[in-house]
Amino acid sequence: MSARAIFVSGCMLVAALAISQAVQQQAGDKLNDLLPKSPTLAEVSKLVKSRVKTPREALDLLKEGNVNFYTAGGPTSRVSPYERRLLMLSQTPFATVLSCSDSRVPPEIVFDQGPGDLFIVRIAGNAADPGTLGSIEYAVEHLKTKLLVVMGHESCGAVKTAMLPLADQQKEAANIQHVLSLVRPSLVGIPAIRDEKAHMREAIVSNVRYQVGEVMKDPVVKAAVAKGAVEVVGAIYEIGSGAVDFLDTPEELRIGSQSGAGVPHSVITYLKS
Image 1 (cartoon, rainbow, N blue to C red):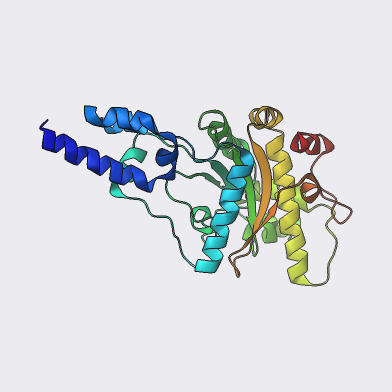
Image 2 (cartoon, rainbow, N blue to C red; image 1 turned 45 degrees about the vertical axis):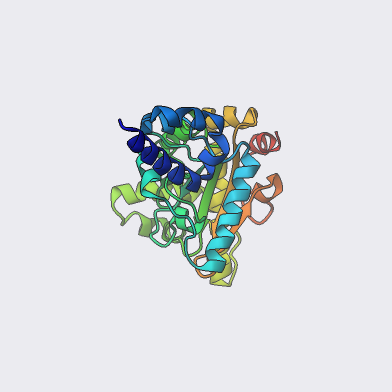
């Protein structure tokens, strides 16, 4: 390769990597050492690290991104063609999000994050089952994500349907009934609030808390939380405002006297660790 080609290649890489906070902060001298050697994308991709080091840094980044979303009204994250090429070779997401499949709830947009930032697991009712837990285990164990967010949302159809009489739910297709069976335990004992919107909100929050408890039973997640490598939080997305309310303390994740289902005491203990 000619000197000019190496120079142009190096400039292209520097321009691309400068856009990425991860590479800018983590590559440092290693990138400078590589550039004169005309590195391959595979070599450069090995320098890319997660943008965050702790679960709380990850949570702060999501909170900041959500503020950008609901105040600016659109995504601010941009990814260059060169960064997309790097993403072909590796991924370093900093958070895992278990969210509903609802088309109105796109986590990357809601948190103003770009490709490679979030590992998304989606199922109606943001429910924990072997499939979603397997994906979460992969993110925690292999991708080393620092934060796990279980995110529900207002006007959730899965929660609303799970609140119907059982005879009505049994009219649904078999696989839909399976999803409803994952949500239904979270609704046991919620108060009969007269205001429909308030009642629905209580059910959605109860489901998020319950699913956090189910996720925390997973041995891979439990071990990671015990070591302080991962933090598990709940979240509620308000479609109308665009804002996300986080349940990120043990008390907020505990279901109190207003609901019958809840996070077991053992889970609260892990959350405090």
